[in-house]
Image (cartoon, rainbow, N blue to C red; front, side):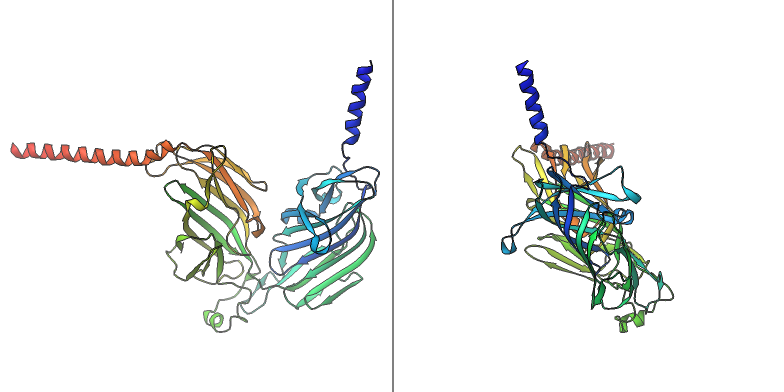
Length: 464
C-alpha cells in the first residue's frame, strides 16, 4: 500500500511539473510595435512584443492571430526571443507552427509560438516576429495606360489582432513614395513623408480590430512567377546540372491601350513607370555553362557576374512587361559537384542546395524542385526547415537500366525568405558508377561485332 502511495505521489509531482499551456487570460502584451513595409509588392511586417505572464501557472507558448485574408496570403512567420540589453542582445529562434482553435472568432487563423523556456508567473519575455504577405496590394484603378503610374490599396488594422489584452501599441506603415492618395485616420494618426503612424493606443481588449485602407503609389516591379520547375540533376562524374523553367507575369494593374516602343525608349520614367524590362537572378558561385533562352531561342541580352560568394545573371526578356503581360523562359547552368555533394558520418551522401527562387523580389505561386539522383540511389529523404509536399518519381535518361529516382518537392506561395539551404540524403554503392561505362563499352562492342559480321557477309557475297 505504501508503495502504491509513493508511486501515486511521483505521478502527481511529474504532472504538476509539466508547464501549463497559456490561455488568453494567462498572458497580456505589455507593449507592441509593428512596422509594415510596403516598398515592394511583397509586404513585410516586423512585430516587437513584450509579453507578460499574469496567470498563476507557467506558460509554455503563445498565439499569434491573423485575419482570414492575411492567413490566405501568409507566406512565412518567424519569431525570435530577445535576451540581454543593447550591445549584449542575443536572438534565439523559436518554434512557430500553424494551429487551429475551436473557438476562433470570425475565422481567425493562428500560429503557435513555443518559448525557449516556460514563462513563469510575473515574468516577461521580448519577441521579434516577422511575417510576410503576398498578393496583398490591390491595384486601383485595375487598368492603367502606359503613361500612368500604378496606385494600389492596402487593407489592414491600426491595432494588431491578438487574443490577448494589449496595454500599449503603435503601428508604423512605410510607403515607397510620398504620393499617398488617402489613408484612414484613427486618432491618434499622422503622416510624415513616406511614413504613416497609428497610435499609440492604450488598453485594447483581445481581438480588437480597427480597419484602415491606404491608397498609394507603388511602381515597383510586380514580378510573379506563376510556376517555376527547377530540376537539379546529380552526376557523380563531376557536376550538377540545373535547369529552371519559368512562367512569369506582371501582377500589377493591367495595361490598357496601345504600347508605344518609341515613348518607352525615350521617356522611360514617365512612359511605363510600373513596367519592368530586366530581371536579376542570384546564382551560386563558380557557375559555368550558363544559358538563358525562351520559346524562340537563345537571348543574348544578358550579363553574368561571377564572384566568390555568389554569381549574378542580369537579363532582359524580349519585350518589357506591363500589367497582365506574361513571359516564359529557361535558365540553365552547371556547378562543381564538390561544392554541393557531401558524405555524412553514416556513409550516406547528401545534396546541400538552396531552396526558393533565384530571381530577386519575386513571388512564386507554385514552386516544384526535382532532385534527380544517380541511377542506383536508394532510400532518399529530404530535410527542409519548413513544410513542403514531397513525392518520388522515376526518370529515364541515356544508358539508364532501371531509371533514376527523382525527389519532388513542391511548395506554394514562395518568397525570397524561403531561399535557405535544404538537404536530400540517399545511399549509393560506388559499383553503380560502372553501369554507364559498361553500357557504353557494350554498345561499342556490339556495334563492332555487327560491323565485322556485315563485312564478312559482304565479302562472301562478293566472292560468289
